[in-house]
Amino acid sequence: MCGIMAYVGDKDLNSVLMAGLWRLEYRGYDSSGVASIMDGELEVRKALGRLMVLQDILSDRPIGGGAGIGHTRWATHGEPSDQNAHPQVDCSGKIAVVHNGIIENHYSLKEELIKNKHIFQSNTDTEVIAHLIEENYNGDLKESVLKSVSKLRGSFAIAVIVSSEPDRIVIYREGSPLIVGLGNNESLAASDIPAIIDHTRRVIIMSDGELAVLRKDSVEFYDKEGKRIEKKEKEIKWSPTSLDKGEYAHYMLKEIYEQPEVIERNIALRIEDGEFNLGESFHFSPHDLAHLTDIVIQACGTSWHAGYIGKYLFEEFARIHTEVDISSEFRYRNPVMGGETLVIAVSQSGETADTLAGLREAKAKFLKVLSIVNVRGSTIARESESTVYINAGPEIGVASTKAYTSQILQLYLMALYLSKLRWALEASSIDEKLKGLIEIPKKMRTILNKADSIKQIAEKFKDSRDFMFIGRGINYPSALEGALKLKEISYIHATGYPAGEMKHGPIALIDKNSPVVAIATQSSVYEKMLSNIEEVRSRGARIISIATEGDKRIKDISDEVFYIPPCGENVSPILVALPLQLLAYYSAVLNKRDVDRPRNLAKSVTVE
Ligand code: M6R
Image (cartoon, rainbow, N blue to C red; front, side, top):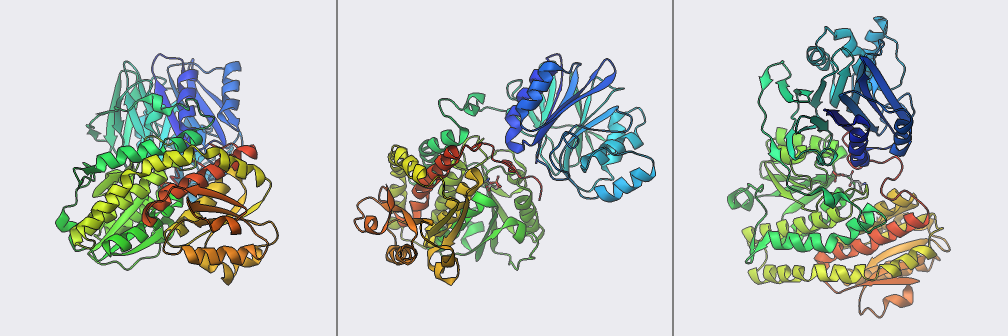
């Protein structure tokens, strides 16, 4: 993970680097640092803690010069500390490196470097890179970086400066994202586009094995053999204003409230005159998909939960056997898959290391690969044969909200599309389902208008330290997601369980006052859910039910009920997500947590 920012030009380095790092803070925020060349000397400022600490240091002791690099860290090797923060520096104090990713062979490299009398100051894998470049430095930073990276194994993106070449920054990408911004008499590089968008909209996306030399008036690209290459630039059209919190206290709350609009926009995009339009990056022909025998969905975290819902949808609508796997398991389990299997990678960021590795694993087995991704141009999108974009707009809060519901929508539409191709459902039934979708944004607004009642529930339970979330059928993954949302931002322990499984062990956890969130909307398993609620209630649990308006039975067996508007069972996870997100949000706020930047997490998990 971690965010890299680099700038060469005439603007004030302190403000440009800091503004970029603020925009990259979602990638990691346990420590940060910057470096530049001032009057021929390398200057480094580093800070443990949030970016504000670095900002205060720079107000007292600004850096200067024309080229600078910055970094916001999510620790992998070495605990968060001043010493382990980036930039990391060589023995001579002339070379500074910022790094995103992991150097897998850092241990053996470090041993070799120590034998050659290098002295290490940190516990990071990154410091190895600084010393390796020092070892190989011959007066040309580009050459020494190329020579050094050939020795590194792992996934990484780096930006490097050296005091003897103060007019340039060298960057290299191998497995971790890096983009270049072409400005007016200035050049920039960063881990993600928002960091540079205030300066330029002309962007070049680096591929693996590529190096760039940034000067203020030029950027040159090279392959790993040092051969000059040409790269195509693209223009970023979206607006930076969509990155502001606006009237909302947190990005997460803003993103929760954006959901009706995101869903509305995507329905309009995907259904044109009753026909499916899965977008310009969906390249599979009907023939490619009509004979699928299996689908395997692989993803992580919230995207895995969306994928799990996808399993129910593909099996129900298209009658295709579907498996769903956590990417970090999928990539190492050597799954048995035949030629007519479609592997779907679901990812908000499009950069999640395990999901990307799973996708590559599937490609190596010559399987069809589709991704469902939010970030355009991300690695997963670029490496997939076809991509369906989530079109949720930038999601800044670490907790995924609007990307999740839009992922479910895309999977819902994909499942209906496959159903149509395979004649699995009657055309009238598909039409009816599409009509039902049109009502969803309005129903989402109805739910959001009642956010206060969720806030009141959160107030009543704010001191509880263990929650259980239960659901069945297509809302079993919703229970998993509700639990993940709560724990990741409020630090309250929560477990999601299939309600029917409680009596096989977890019910032993239930005692007087244990909060149990039960998803009991109208569905084919509603009656079963009521029985499962009774089972935990009779052991003293306090029940918070999510139910359907008009349900008269649920309030008798619940302590709290939140009603959602009636909707089809298979689309209900989109509506159910909202009260669960709000419950997590208000619980976190009431527990005074850093909602958008929860501890130990980062938005984009680019390490395995
Ligand atoms: O970018 P991705 O969707 O691939 O990310 C996957 C997970 O890291 C992500 O969903 C994570 O679980 C979020 N913190 C959930 O809110």
